[in-house]
Structures are given as C-alpha cells and as structure tokens.
Length: 192
Image (tube, rainbow, N blue to C red; front, side, top):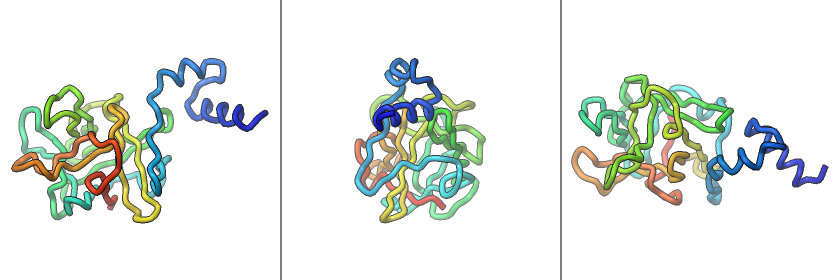
C-alpha cells in the first residue's frame, strides 16, 4: 500500500468510516482546524486536558466564569473575570473520540458550553453553558503551544478560535466569543 493510501485509510478509520464511503463522509465533515506554528492539536481523554478544570485567560489575567446570576440571553455566558476559582469557574472537559472533539460542561449548572451562532452583533458566537446535550455547537478542538504550555480553543461550529473580549465594557467585559481566525494573546489560556 502506498503511503498516501495508507494515510487515507488511517484517517477513514479514525473518522469511523469505511474507505468506500469516505469521500461522501469526508465531504460532510468540517475541515480540520488550522495548525499554527508551535501549536498542536490535543487528542484523547488523558491528561493534561480531561477532567474538572479551570481556564485562566492570560490576556485578561482572570479565570473563566459561567455567569449564573445573569438573566435572559446572557444567562450562563462565559467571561474571564474571576480572580479565584469557585463553583462558577469549574468545567469538566470531555473527550469524544467518535467526533474527535472536546466539550465543556459547567460544574455549576451541569450544562454544556455552546457557541451561540444565532445571536447578532457583539453577542454573535458568544459562549454560554446552556445546552442539555452535546450537538455541533458544543464541539471544540483544543490546541497546546509546545513552547509556552498555553492552550487555545477552536469552535467546530463556526471554525473560529475562542477569544476573550477585553474591549467590551461592564457586564460583557472579557466575554468569551468564538470569533478569531488566528491565535493571539486574547485566545490563550492556562488549564489549571
């Protein structure tokens, strides 16, 4: 078997499709996340990613909270705003080998984190812990920088990296949104 054919068969096996049905299955699948320099995709359920963790966004200098006190369409919005870790700052990171993706579940309300694509304006692609089940809006790729040890999250729903919005004010300051096409300082966090 030639190397290209072997790699194609391996990708089909990882995707859970047969080689015969692969072209249709691969056409329906979202493209793989971009591979920035010094960043690698984290795969699997083992350390360092899996388990109950906190996300510390370095540009904001804060931990990510699910805003349980907010109401309406901002209820359970994710923001990098806490200086210490409490119940609102804990998330279970779940690996799904079938979809080759991660999902985040709020430890406070038990809901899965969604990328809100139905919202317009400055709330478009906001992250909220509001889903009862994992669907396409709750799937993410996780990247790790080999030089710094920092992470970045890539939404499979809209093919964008998750950013902390430091230019926003008041109750929307440091909101997490899947809106970046590359990893910069606002997209990097530490898992603790």
